[in-house]
Length: 462
Image (cartoon, rainbow, N blue to C red; front, side):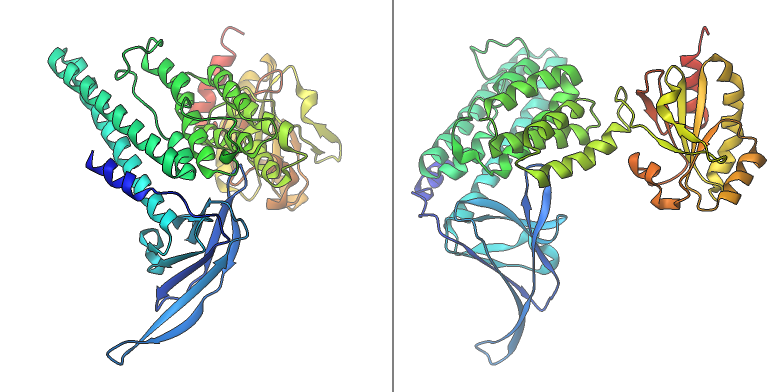
């Protein structure tokens, strides 16, 4: 309780919002500093800051060289920005609410910087520390409960359950104090305050997963416009979606997430951040549930948030070419004879789209294995479309003839600038995409024994 008494004495009313000047001071180190923001679907560079060299004379007569960076935010309302040389070395800073924020740091360790002159940032740092400690305690108790349950130690189960209840109470005291004294921080805390399944005596849910799905957001007021432009909405949705993808699977995850998105006001930045965070969490987890989320984000925000939508479309196009069950993008291009080859004309067959080139040693080494599979399954409905990243038509044709590649081929002869490779996000070769008879992706990147096993599975009994 001493912690919360301390917090309550510290979290008095926030100052009036004011345009904020951020000053970063580093000793004897000059390098680029960037300010990163969030556009609803990912972090982007908002501005690059240049350093001004300054020589200070100390009390003992010696001099000290420093570099000073200054940034003046245009937004008056409290927002979190990320400042540093990169998103691998950055400092989260609350901007707005205090007229000046002073950051003292070593440029290589800006994430360990000291912030002064900002009451709000002091509060933010203390809140983060308290939330992190609560999460750590939650994880520790979870491990203890699993061990006690495995050992069927009823006394230990009761002890841990009691501690879960105490931790839940501690979380709620912190949340309520923040809401009362610092609404901006209260909203952030509401997105990070999850109370346990075992700690609630009257939960209507039958297990931890159901409890998590239905109560994670229960402390959030979805109609509160103060959640607009809050990075915490994005980050909470990202973690929530990632957990869902592992706990309930793709279809159920989409059902749950759509209920979440619908709670935020239509067209709001909060809904955009929720969609963007969920998409990123699912995309990182390589979940097929990412596709419907991306489609919804694009449909709802293409007209009003073009930058955010462009970011999602870029990731979405890559996802379309690697997610099992997704409809593969079409490819159209010239054959060695100048005829037009169209991937969609191969519907009805299982198709291996094989990205390769005559100059690619691993590709040429793989060709005899691919040829063996083609000879084995071609009369059972298997086709190959070789997509070459060559620039020389002569070498391309020579390689086809020398390796005996008797299947379909196309190339725009643009090497790594190939439009076909760009559509599928090809960054290295050989690369393959296996499609079913409807043109949907079965798997990507199959080669050698993996490809052989998958084809044997598909054509077994045929």
